[in-house]
Structure formats: structure tokens, C-alpha cells
Length: 111
Image (cartoon, rainbow, N blue to C red):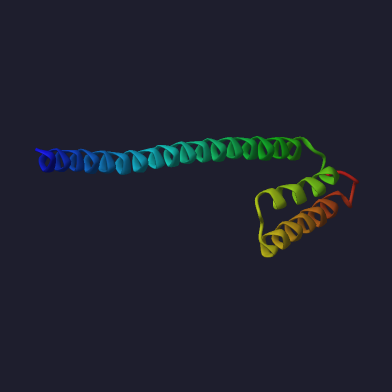
């Protein structure tokens, strides 16, 4: 009877160990899921902040005079991570537009 009792106790312990291992694994998965959900929420919040920042810069740009646009262009280029080629393209376009505007105003002082 003692040997059988020992064997039954051993099986119960093995089951408990298996459940404990599975329970720990499940707990780790839950912690991982919570961390993933928290990271996702933080990414969503960061994206919302970035969109609002870009929206505000773009609104200022659209309402600005030509001379006030230059520093706003720099802020947009930074926020949107323009490449050096893209920055150069914007600068060249601004210069060409300013030259064209001056040429159009030169005869009577207005377009």
C-alpha cells in the first residue's frame, strides 16, 4: 500500500509540476501580451502627436507669407525626414518661384 501511495503522490506532483510550468508559461504570455498592448498604445499615441505636430506646421505654412515660409519649410523637412535631395529641390523651387514673381512684377511693379 505504501508503494502505491508513493506512486500516486508522485503522479499528482508531476501533474502539479506540469500545470505549474504551463501556468508560468501562460503568465509569461499574459505579461508579454500586456507589454505588447502597452507598446502598441504608446505607438498610437506617438503617431497622433506627430500627426498633430505636422498638421500645425502645415497650417502655419499655408497661412504664412512667402518670407515666413522659409523656416516653416525647414521644420517640415525635419519632421518629415526629407532627404538632402528633397531639401535642395524645395530650395530650388522656392528660388525659381521668387525669380518668376520678380520678373512678373518688374514692368509696372505688380503682376
